[in-house]
Length: 118
Image (cartoon, rainbow, N blue to C red):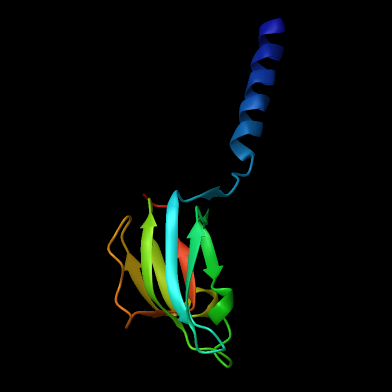
């Protein structure tokens, strides 16, 4: 009888562990990009250990009606990243490899998707 209760308790604990939601983690490293501020001055932003996986809208350039897109992304994180031409990870996209070289100023972006893949 005890064995049956012990087995049921162990099975219940295992089921609980398996169904627990996983928490968001972070990519290790920096993702950076440039943009032109409303005053016309070039700016550089670096996201340190960005949350992953998930879409990150770039606040400075998220509104296509009031700003030019960001440019020259550099993925120096430990995971693959997708950059998108539109807010909310929509539009055309390009994939940047982990710890890659800085991309060209011609590569425009308004949002980034951290893939969670190393």
